[in-house]
Amino acid sequence: MHLTGTSLRSSRLKALEPIVQTWADCVVAYSTFHNGDDAAYYYGERPNVSVLCSAAWVAGAVGIEEYAAEKGFGPKARPGRADLYIKGRDFYFAIEAKHRWDDIFSEGSNTTIQDAIVSAKEDARDVHDGTRVAVVFLAPSCKSDSLFEFKKNPKIIIDRYVESIQSTYGDAGLIGWSFPQSTRFIEGSDGNFWPGVAVLAYAVNRDS
Image 1 (cartoon, rainbow, N blue to C red):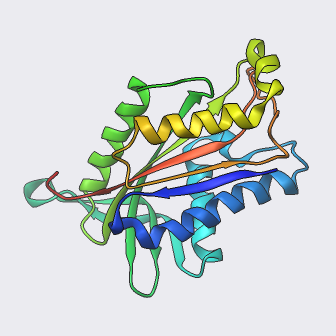
Image 2 (cartoon, rainbow, N blue to C red; image 1 turned 90 degrees about the horizontal axis):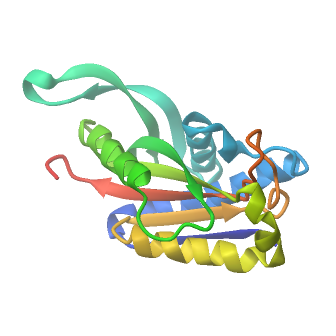
C-alpha cells in the first residue's frame, strides 16, 4: 500500500495543497513505472523540483523551473532565477527549494534541515512577485543495520516519521509525504534504504 498524504496549516497555501497531493501521486508513479528499481526523490533538489512542477501540470495549473526573476530589493536588486513558478487561474506561487537527507528513525529537530528551511526562506524572500514559498524536500533513509527493524512493520515506522515531522516542523504551512510501495526497500549506492520523501512548505513574507 502506498502511504501518501498532506497536512495543511496555512490558508495561504490552500491552492498548493491539491498540487502537493498530486506530487505525492507523481512520486508513486515514477517508482511504479520503474518497477521499484528507481526513485525520483533520491537524486536531490532539482529532480524533486521537477516532480513538483510536473504535478502542477497534472493538477490543472502550469509551471516552469529555473525561470528568470528579479531578485532582491533597492540597491540589492539584481536579475536572477527562481526555482519554480506555478500558476493557476487565481493563484501564483514563486518557489525556492532545498533538499536534505534525513533518518527514518529520527525524532526532533535536525540542524541541517533547520538551516535548509532558513536558507529557502531567505531565497524566497528575495523574489518580487507571487506568493513566495520556501520548500524543503526531505529524503529519509533507513540504515542497513536497521533494516530488520524497519521490515518488521514499515507502516508503523513511516507513520511515526510523518507524525514526527508534523510535530517538529509544526510552523510549516503545508506538509506532504509519499512512500511508494514499490520502493519501500530500495537500496541506494550508500548501502542504505530510501523508502520515500516528504516536503515542507512555508509561505514567506518579504519582511519576515
